[in-house]
Each structure stands twice: as C-alpha cells, then as structure tokens.
Image (cartoon, rainbow, N blue to C red; front, side, top):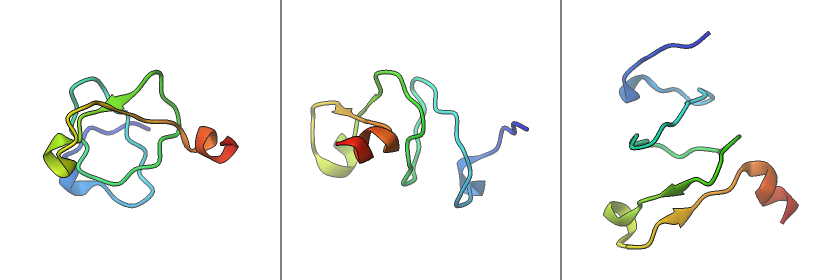
Length: 61
C-alpha cells in the first residue's frame, strides 16, 4: 500500500520513495538506488554532491 503524507508523519520503519528534488529531513537506510547523490551543504558545508550507496553495498565493502 502506498500513501502520500507529510514528512512530519514519518515513523521509524517507514519506506520512502525518494524522487529527484525531494528533501528528506531524516536519517535513512538506502534499500535501492540508481546513481544517487545528495546535497548536504546546508547541514555539513560540503559543496560537492555526496554519493550514496545501499545498505547491501556498504556491507559488502
């Protein structure tokens, strides 16, 4: 089942379908992605895009 709801209503364990341009103000575990990068400059000051990898890729490393 898929629901559209405001980010304030996200709970631990929820799965989120992230699309281009979407802001996700939460810690997440990435399950599936295709060439995902994020802009974390507002939080970290890092100006370069940050490449994200899935949990499975992290475990393999």
